Amino acid sequence: MATETETLVPLESNPEVMNKFLQKLGVPSQWGVVDVMGLEPEMLSWVPRPVLSVMLLFPLSDAYEEHKQKEENDILSKGQEVSSNIFYMKQLISNACGTVALVHGVANNTDKIELAEGHMKTFLDKARDMDAPSRGQLLEKSEGIIQAHRELAQEGQTNTPSAEDPVNHHFITFVHKDGFLYELDGRKAFPVNHGPTTPDSLLEDAAKICKEFMARDPNEVRFTVLALAATD
Image (tube, rainbow, N blue to C red; front, side, top):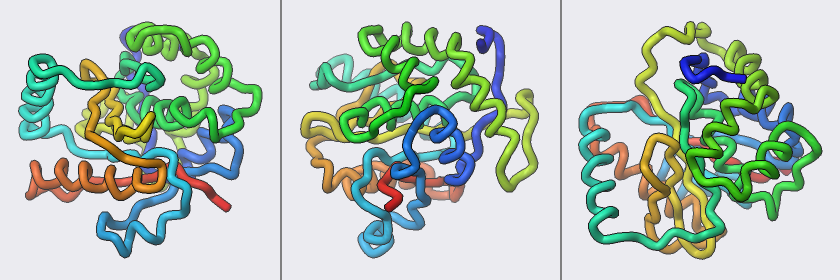
């Protein structure tokens, strides 16, 4: 169990580490995380299909925080359509954004991912009928998922930071659900509907939104894009 004050060491944006994490939790090896090496059509064409979700790791900047506040205010004043089938959860554990992003990707694709009996399936079965904050609280108590995060956060190519090291990067997930592209960010007040998409165009449509994140911070190069996709 993660205590309310616990800060985890963040998961590295490394497909090998993330795939070990997913498989430890019961995701079959026919689905895995891959690097998206660029956002232009030619680079996107190299990504295996089908793509189930797209993850963006980006720096938390003043420009991002300003946009986040404006976007939230706009949605609150104008409203938005959100599918009742979307699985969204709040992030309550510090530095768990990588885990939350991966859970969002899997949870919204359980019609395609045949989960084995394990910690992820147990969590999703319990969380299915909960609201977003309750799902976040349930994750805090999900010892199997938290322990897998702890173990895999120690792996990877870079020097493992301590949990106390300042982290200024954040992971979010884009998924298709019922004809729309949703941005799922456990730090936001709600999912964000970015307009129409299809399972086949999810990667291209999510790439456009990723480019908008980059355009807001033109002097920043620390962006990473990953996809949860078929591995065969």
